[in-house]
Amino acid sequence: MDFEAERARLIEHLSTEIKDKRVLEIMSRIPRERFVPSENQHLAYEDGPMPIGLDQTISQPFIIALMTEALELSGSEKVLEVGTGSGYQAAILAELARLVITTERLPALAERAKSVLDSLGYTNIEVHLAEETLGWQSEAPYDTIMVTAGAPRVPANLLAQLAMGGRMVIPIGSRYVQELYKITRRKKKNMFQNLGSCRFVSLISKDAWEEE
Image (tube, rainbow, N blue to C red; front, side):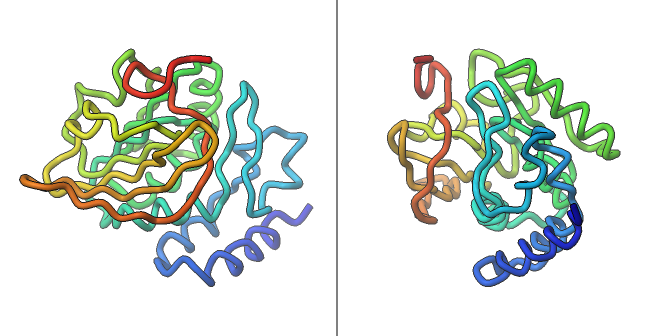
């Protein structure tokens, strides 16, 4: 299969709505097929989510691009990603930021993602097994935070790890459908921007949803 041609087709499709050319350029270079199960590689460049095992998914490319664009990364940031999953999103963030700290609660996914990211030569990504508390407090504060699972509310502990003036992108809603929010932390009143409807797997934590 000609993955490069399929990737180019996807990027052309995304460019009708994603305006940050840096995000599109980076996604045009990263081999998404490396992050999905071998039996699904032929679907790697369809604009939809895909199962990666253990009831988890790799997100729709449009949503990945939208969330990345919303963080407004300039290259100097330390980024926290909550929910490593396949590692694909971490790879994109690493091309746009100084350092990416990413946490994953499922050991098998964390190990697989780290293996793929290492094989692609990323040296500015730290993959950690998630702790009981959301995020990775020892490295806080973060310039930006991306949450790749749906939460019932904005977790206060996670917001506390965001630097003043920093930006968080997080899906908020029920277990089945959410609204994607960009939150800018302010001293007096945080700023919320609704980026549209989305659907993510549930964020599992004491600060979010309990395990079913």
